[in-house]
Length: 309
Image (tube, rainbow, N blue to C red):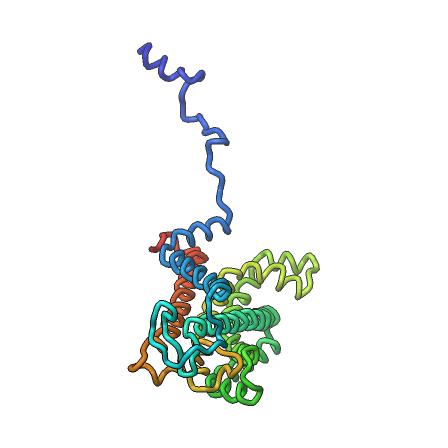
């Protein structure tokens, strides 16, 4: 009995149900951003894809500084793959590795431009339509429906042909047909969030429409905006490649992966390295960005409690 009493009082006070854990021993609650980052870092496929994409971007930016051949230099037509020219040379004698590096630079520049512009337009239109409703909602919805029923590739091909095929023209044309889905998602989320108490409190405090949208609504939609902006990059890469493959995309002196693939499609069987080199880089970019988008979607989803591989 004495030993039990001694054990109960060994901490300096009797043990009982009223004991409380010291505050320092309690783990600090994680913020929403920390939870999202933790879930994303545990998504193995997304993290692996992010690593591959970062390495690819670094190679595209840094390797041309050290590669012995430029994208404009000619050395001999249709040289086979070798240590000097790992992918061989084109019909006019340009090193294919240098061509792929240059084409990837333009393709990524177009894709990022499209993603940024489409996200900005889609978020602004969608948030205005979802918050103001009424006439504004009807006008934005009809405009969105109009752009959705237009055959995008055909319209983009015509516009690129009319306004020349510089890479920034291609980016602007593709962006004009890429904002609709982002606008519809943003509109739906805005209509849901605008009924919450914190929005009612902001209205009662005298906040204007612009402040409510960009200070309160948009920050609460950052998850879906980030995911859709990421996926828009992959969609833009493929859309640009499709246009360039049919000869209605990027024109000389600019280039892109789609244009390089189109130029070397006839060599698919006789000199496959000229076709498969740029094609595999294009597929790699699209796959990695889509996997990163999947990881971000899982990380921002509050219903997703379990870490996916």
